[in-house]
Image (cartoon, each protein chain N blue to C red):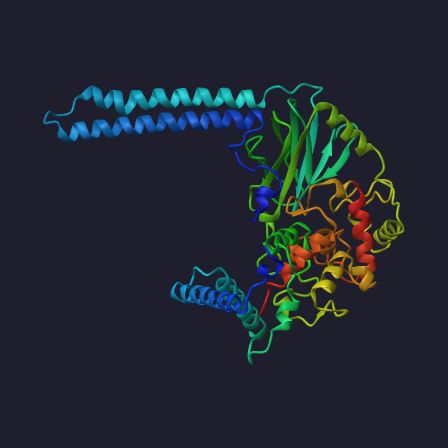
Length: 310
Length: 172
């Protein structure tokens, strides 16, 4: 049986796919090896001292107790600082900016927030080999943004803008997770990162400018009708259909995401219908009310319409 | 040579008969002395054992030794219950149903599927038997137009595997 973590791409620092994760992994491995060597060396000296009849010598204390730790820590500090600089460097005035706002328990994503302000949610598309500035905000409590395969984590603090530079180096699908306890459904607050080629990223941004896909079948049209009349529009936006909802995730391309409920369930008709009918069961503490007052056919229609928005 | 010489005399017929009986007796004695080397006897014995097995199978029942036709009728031949469980997980059935043995399947939108094998009806509209259950899984809205359960585009082969898994859920 697959776990949730395996389902939506790697969520481990060991499968590195970004500059930050790669450098941090190298630093970790180096520190572990050096630390082990020092440990073995110190133990060897301890055994030697235990067996030796002679008394201690002053230069051992000065050298091993003061100079050696000082030198080691100095080297580590310099290496760490250099790596930190390398990780955060590389963005210029033309680099992509993505604004990510943490909400209980989902992620609002705005590409190019200063100009086009193209909104999506719960799935962050990144161009490969391009340093990107992530502008991290929170709308309610402290969250923390963490995609282990790509970069280190950064807190999202209400009233503050934290910036994190990430450079993804491999195309693919990676999973991120809120890394700061933020409430009842904190463990269910994940997201996906999809790394695309630069061209595919531009195509994706263009699609974000267009209206959502048209309702084609009678069932999809009925679903759109249900969406407009049942109150969904108070919180959700679907471009070209209703664009005032800001409290919940943008649903303009909800069916195109691989996951539902912020990186937690597979995106499919069954899970969508279950989600709409009983949110509280799937994500306790979520703001969205359960819509089990919809008739069976209405529930199926609105699920089918949302699933068709790709 | 005259034509009559080619016909056997009554004596000769008697001799042939005695020789034949003697050969039969010898074979029978040999077979009796060495059971297991007699191909005809072995075939008979095998057939007898197989027949007995079939009779035992037919007679075996939950209580009174009567055939368990009911259990036999709940079997989906060549369906893979384990694969069915992973299909159930993939299609998100767990967001609406409690399904023992499927990870995170604790939905309360629809009925629990625990002990599904003992359920009399599927969704209250179809008798709970393999063909009807597979038909329901493939196309619930055909059988119950007002149901909240969506058509998930399940193929017959997938439906058979899923039904096989559901029929492993017994009791509790």
